[in-house]
Length: 221
Length: 247
Picture 1 (cartoon, one colour):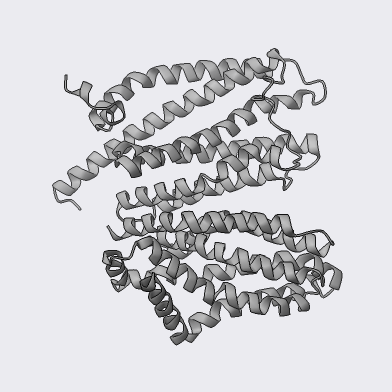
Picture 2 (cartoon, chains in turn green, yellow):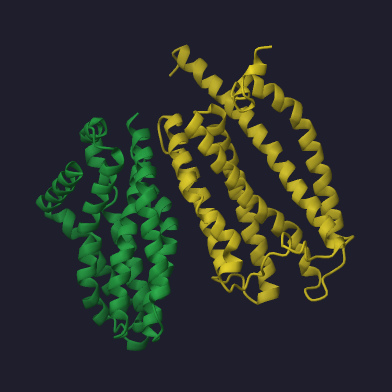
């Protein structure tokens, strides 16, 4: 377990050293959201309706940006082989990588999303639901993304392929997260949607490490 | 005979044994498929009554429903084969997944197009974003993702294995499609073929429907066997080429 934590810290440290790796997804998230009012016009009611969906869609796309590097660098320089040989189960390696990915994508999104929400005139009641949906939902994005990155490791044209594989699997997350925010905006309880989202989190954290580790072993054979 | 001691599942992992079995079955499934599809189309288009509400558009059902069933059944079979390939390293199972995938994608596409053509006169819209339609669309993209992934590796074996893992992960979509009409309040009608109280359809409509389902199934078996045989031959050619140093 401490080995997994060390790997998590190591990955974070690497991300922070390469500052641009950290900034790129966040900058994409902010800029893409800010394109919306410029594209559809600044009318507050319209923006408030679009806000939950736009915030979440750009969050999906922004997490994709950092995914292809998740295992690629370690795969190319042989680190991944050593990790696979080490006594730590490969499943834990996956979890450590997922955690590091989330800290550098999902977490900054959570920090910046309320500000973007204000700029998009998001309904005042929706902010809590937005934050909770990001808190529960973005780790699942990182998990599914890690699976996609593992299964496309060593493939030609990995980046486009990764988007094709991962986006369909993101659909339920997008649906329930935006439903939760929209429900809160209409004065309804976001709780059922958030609970469903939490069930994806629970299912994902159990199943994804095994699927991703199987894919990694296939790539390392 | 030594083959008697090998479990059935593994006996046909031998390409030669599979080839013999397949070439015996093929003419039969091909013939049965042609007859069933011909009869099904005749009964579906001419010898069955129009619906009392939907009129003649109900005839779209005889293509839409079998295609929808096949889109899910094929994916289920692919998932089972993918599991067999991963667990027992069954060589033919991995190839089956690859052979079945384009067919499954085609069935899904036919289901979506036929459904869209049916939706326009009945619902007044080519497409609605209800749970059944959305999950079927996701299934279509899962098939496409598999097809793209399997061909993206220089080593074909590695592509097959990566694809098998993807197919197993995507299997979560199947129950969502099946039960979407019960879990959510959808515009798409709920199940009327397999229900607790039996089919909710008249016999005159069930006959062409079952003929078409049989026709689609045997068509699938026929084409999958053909694709498997050609894939095995392609492999043998590749092996010869590598052995003789052409590559």
